[in-house]
Length: 270
Image (cartoon, rainbow, N blue to C red; front, side, top):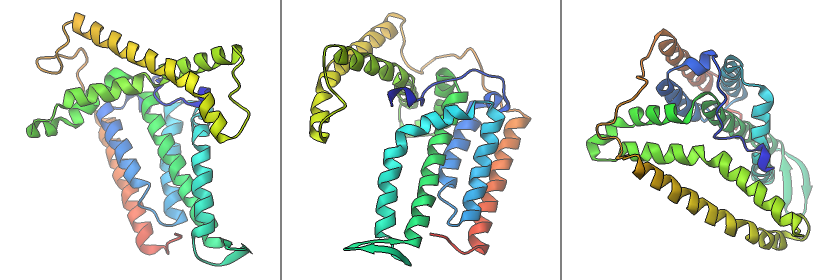
């Protein structure tokens, strides 16, 4: 399961999505996260899925990588689906004791599950096609208006990017610690839920120690290189928007308009 977590990884490429301005990709990702909650019918949801599918196709990232990254959220999908199936009122299909499965509950569970999958895939697409350094610059530029409120935008962007960058490293280290514990006879796959949680303690302790040591080493390295944040800092690569970036913004605006129209003229599903 740990090997299926691919968020935070960057896959170099020369596709249209790779070449978009990182500020545009960041804004479009945030817009899509809001966009996915606009439709309340299947037609609108299909339009949102079509937009995401177009972006995935243009990125030239293998689709199996997106499927691999969706595996860790399956327990969350199952949990939310069960809640919606049994607690949404409507036409009863099956009833046992106090539990009732309704047709509307099944539709709602499927609708919300697709929304969650689209959210995860959209976030993965951003990190797959944008390097951590470029993402830091884009995040700082997008949040730059907050400097008026004396908010340390550069520090916030740096912390978020460093955290995102070290997710694959922590996953790899966790897998190594678990393999080492299993080689010493630790059993982490049998027993009830409480026993499995207790079996993770020998993994969490060295993982926390390693994480703090890595953070201390990173801070020391930054201090040795006289890093002082964003004041007076220059950039090797300057960000400039070109025609394709404006076209991407227009396409997103068109899809938002289509979703709003679908809500107005089509009866809601949930």
